[in-house]
Length: 435
Image (tube, rainbow, N blue to C red; front, side):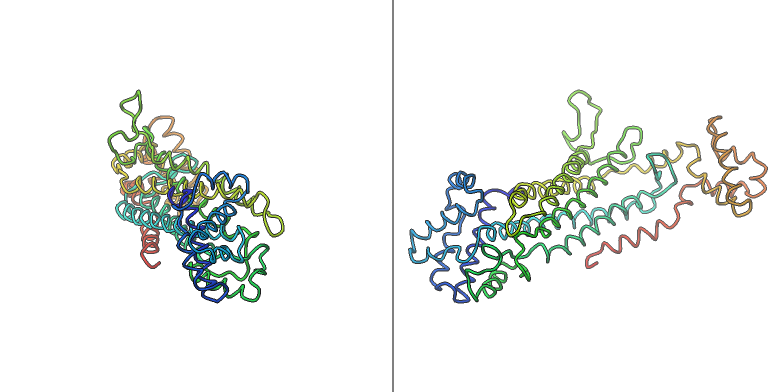
């Protein structure tokens, strides 16, 4: 991703626009046919003086202005007649924005490829632990039993939605920007629409109904969509890092030489991949905010908001790619300790299944009465350090309704996970190719 948004590639994508513009204009008869190959031959970033371009950009306030000057000079060296048709009828923002769109196309390809791998890894993890019982936690406290497959299915379900979002935004985001100085294509006379159509076709981009140079919802949508994705990656990272706590110790990031250690404590196994993703999840929302704030632009060319995108969006995309790759590595090699999960289910000495007993008793005693009875038993079990089942077994009101075998069944966590199997199966099915 750093290559996609490197200075070299940024320049090359603007030059790709210039080369395609020349081809399109030659195709529709706006410039001489001989001019296009002469211009295209010089649209190579390695031919440009990057240091001079950087210095001139600082003075011009735009990289396109000195780029066009250098390109014109390069064309003039070999084809003086063709130099007159460099950047014909276009404006700086056309080159910068369309170049950005071409970069975003490459970036989205990379992100979608890694996201597809993450979905596959999550689907496999979910299948493997479809019925592995684990503590379900609310407000960081033990709540009810779930399966670890249900938790990972939640990660997968969100990942599926992000894949759908990325597919949905591509036609809007990967759109040509070509409008000339103020969006009228006046410099091209009556041929402006013909050139725009030929240019969009040449670059493989969608042709908008209207130039969008001062309406930034397209690039802001990319930023906000990636912000949502990073939020989910942060959620997965948070769950993994909490599961890795010494006192919980239910899952672990993949082990490797030098991974997750400490400079002073030999025993440490830190959630380094999760922490990297969490760091991105902390940084990205502020960058999304810049993209949204930058949408408020002045008339036909933004003064500050547009320019704020130039560094913000590449950083946002790169952070997203990094967080995604870290979580892909984590999920693909995640170590799950099912025995420890079973052990943690007994931490509260059966109280995690208090609701199961209350529901069973509620059928005959009524919900409120059953809730009160089981609540009193939980309090007594906590005070005396005993298992809830043993306390309930001593209560005559419970014995009148539930046999010892009934209590045994109620205190087996796998019997109180509801319809998790069906929920998991639906989520995995939705993740299959073509869905």
